[in-house]
Length: 134
Image (tube, rainbow, N blue to C red; front, side, top):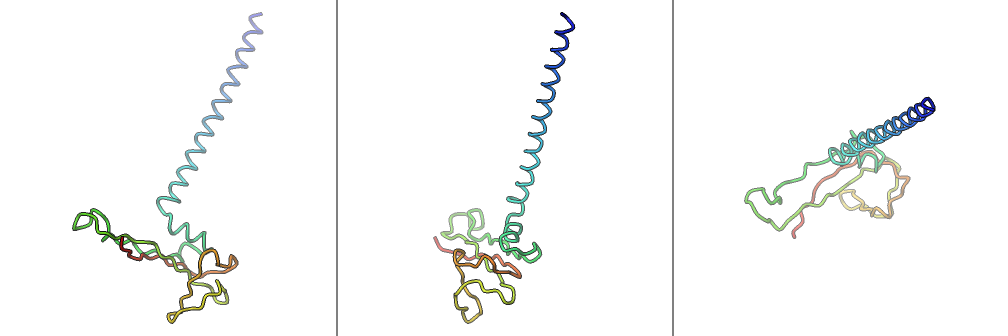
């Protein structure tokens, strides 16, 4: 009788070990995926995001640094009644048609995202900032 009991106890301990290993593998995988997501979306969100969004390499994405003159802690300290909004321009590859908008005198055509042809190919993406009053 004692041998049967020992066999069952050993089997139970073995099952618990398998469950514990599976739990640690799940936690480890989640932690690694979390670190990758943190890096992609917080450390380098603009370059990586716009490269994927417009189908260009990360070398073809140019991001201007965000100005700090509207920040609360920038001299003089206090509210400045302004903020900056991101402005994105994508240069279309030769022969691509983005939308039906007519280009202005500088050659820029403004296409709303909803009107943009998903098959359009781009050469590069430029991200800059536009100052807005509050």
